[in-house]
Image (cartoon, rainbow, N blue to C red):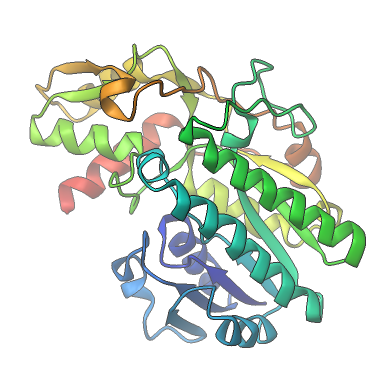
Length: 320
């Protein structure tokens, strides 16, 4: 298989690149390094079949050439992280919507399979947990910039599915649920890297809100394995598919567990959302996927437990 990965120098993209190379595929990555890092793929340089291009998907001549050379496009390039989204809503919307638009437009010329990376954020403030792919999306009001990301990714999904319905472009939309693991940065608000860094430094572990909000964290290796199986499954085409785990934990309990596993003396400090982000910030109280669809398609069964994930991330930061 010849694969193009937009955002290939990012956290998930770098792990996906590695897995594809390990199975003998050719890998082209396109990344402008706005949130990714060349360090994430430095160990892949020189491997047979690996090429990287430091540029944006908005460079359409280059994008078109790379798509022509590929069998499948994993479109992972996007604005990521709550902190970045709140601080740069224009960048978020333009990057997500326009980037997806140009990828689909050029992939459609040769009918190349496209995997669109979406997010559990699109479920918004829904209380219908666990979240099913065919459930209603409940987004907050437009003056709350926090929802700009969810809305932009929902538009990505609508556009991808429209290309499939109207123009028969093969697409698969995947909704990631809090994917974590080594190489993830806390720079844009990702909670586990931030908690681990604070715990190892002996700093207060800052839990935003009251700590009762819960998430289900999925190891990047389980996510990558699911992606590779989905692109080989014809029944996945034209579908929206959750990828995650159902092992749920509150943010307060997560901070406690990281403190324990890292043997840290850090105190846990609760920070109001208004101080952490912006006035009137709204969060999702729970974010847990229904996995019936992906189980039926590929027999998906995530292997890594939360403790496995935390131990790996703690070791990664200690080595850094």
